[in-house]
Image 1 (cartoon, rainbow, N blue to C red):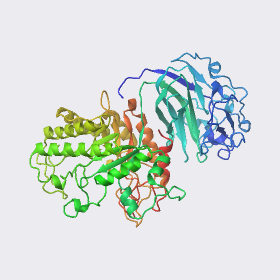
Image 2: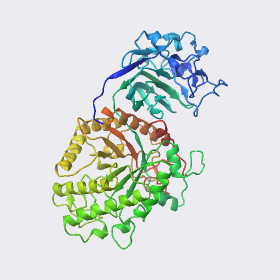
Image 3: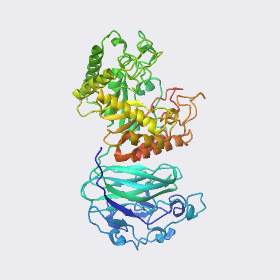
Image 4: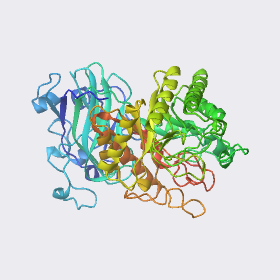
Length: 591
């Protein structure tokens, strides 16, 4: 993930369009894309065939109403496909591998004018429209590419709802890669990463569904960077058993009951996070007695089977406690309470880790990602692995960190890392910290990097840095997160994943009281279903913009807990009646 880019690129110069004006009556005047094999009919460079929306040849639009942004061959908009030329001839550019520019034919939408109309609500004044450069019009095939990994970048604008996205497909090395447009009234850079070109060809494009309006894509560039990338998108599913036992039913958006794991996969999830406690909900021990009897080893093993059955990867978080753990609370499990020496604690922790990993592997659910602790800014297993002095927690009043002990904390991280790798050598090990609330990016990244430097200096090991990011708690926007992550992963640093994030879709819970997130911090999107989705679209865009693809994705907290009036019922990804919220669609067109 840290290799330098090779800077072999293709500049895509496409004739301008303006969706809002050319597509009168939403999509009635736009073009629909035949997502099947290429057909000559006016598509340059051997690209997919294009016909008017509603054309009986294509049935109007394919794949749930996806259509080409800007359209083509639309006589009512004053354009003509007859004048289109092959891309190489239109631009006069070389078609040699690794160089040259490709442009659409001069007879495209709007007759090749530099701007056609303005943004919706801008009175159609072209001068008031922010420029995105030459605009991408439908699918365009590129040929004679050097095989390898590429990224597609583009400038975008979006002022309406619905789903608009840029993509690369037919590149020979995997499924279509997509990035959705976030809401933005100013040109915003989007990136599609990890396009593995095999066979020298790829098709780039800009698309929208039937509900989308006012989406613009321009200045598209496919560049060889030699950086593989797997976008991780998912959330914590540890509350599913408890939620189902409460009588709640998970439903699709139309109200149809469905297995919750299948709903997540159908909407684009590829990772399920599972957190495991040692013995939660045991009434004989405090603070275990304060927890519901779920997310213990047996429950997590059962949930892992359900996740794997639908094809999800697994991120497993070891809490090493019977109770919630975070930066201020790290209570020893009750059956470790009699341990008095650090050597015994370290050995017991390693044995527990390796034993549970072996159980996961034995049932065919070995996790791809494993977190050693949860938001462990203050350390692990107080008082044996303290990062700095901390007051006692009400949950474990005798576990006091009177001083920091980095040599011991580093050894705990190292022992747990070795235990994971002993069972699953390919599993990626994460150390997960909370974002420094209220800090500017330089401060947040500085504290973050200092922590990891101390981990390594004291014998700790890890593969991925983990970070919790909530606009409410951190008082920061996605732009701040992006800057923080760039600083936290600069140079030869290991990559990072956003381990937790969340956003209210309703200001309050069912009974009108505030939930865990009092508000959504400085992010501008309202506490509505659409606002929650718009936040996640912006978050995905910011994650993919991080330099060299060193932010791997995000895991949502908590998408599944829809128990009546739960603390997170108004931040989940299902509404109060159990119906899937629009936020899930933010994952469907992002990979």
